[in-house]
Image (cartoon, rainbow, N blue to C red; front, side):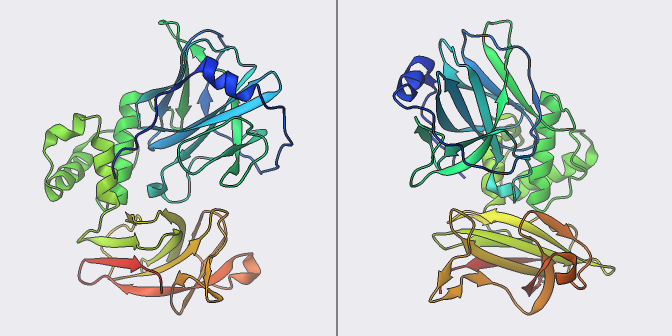
Length: 355
């Protein structure tokens, strides 16, 4: 995956000028959870910077509330242990709001989305001047109010953090471990602690991809890892999306004691993804379906566009991991037909295409 070309941060005065032309709109309702942020008191005059102390590459969007108008801007991609300036110059907002999401390579977003404000975002880079009522091509998303801290250089900073409370070094290593596991290398547990197991997995990854050890310290290393994760592999299971639609997929494995189903993994158009199947199973199970921007199943000639089989396993609409497959319906779960995938050759690539 190539790193996206984001426009430079918009000066705060231009951002405010766009939003003053619009009044407050009706708030759309959306369920909310919580996102961890280190926050302090709100200074007024400085650049605003977001720093990522999570083990995920994230994309962030910000909202600015000022004088009864609200605007949003995104997406800002931030690697683990990296920071990014998202607004420059004098900032006199009444409130600053944030939405953050993990890249699709991680499956269903592991970042709990929260906030009392529901604001509009768009799929690609965007600036929305009237962000409380969504228009065509925009979708509602929950935003959390944040109060950044003033740093010694006079700027403002807010940190995205996990319960693990990584420092920068730990967040970067945990981010590498997480992508190694997704790519099929044994770097677990994902804890931000270095050791022979992590170093061995990393060395094998670099060798198999023809990369030198110097790239690990490159600012583009996470982009290189994500590109590898989203490319077909000779080991493990690979899903490739050859359709123009977003695909949500689920995988199931049998460890001899129980069949465990997990989902949903998001596969963007033209991309591949390795679900985190551990070990070297002889057989796994796969289900995938194409969905629209509101996650509704796409139909072609009145038939759902999906790829499955005859093995009935349990799923649910939201992110799940289920290790008891009996009597799905009575437990509030949905049975879906998974396809058996032969892994005896060591690797398998499933390509999802239009009929």
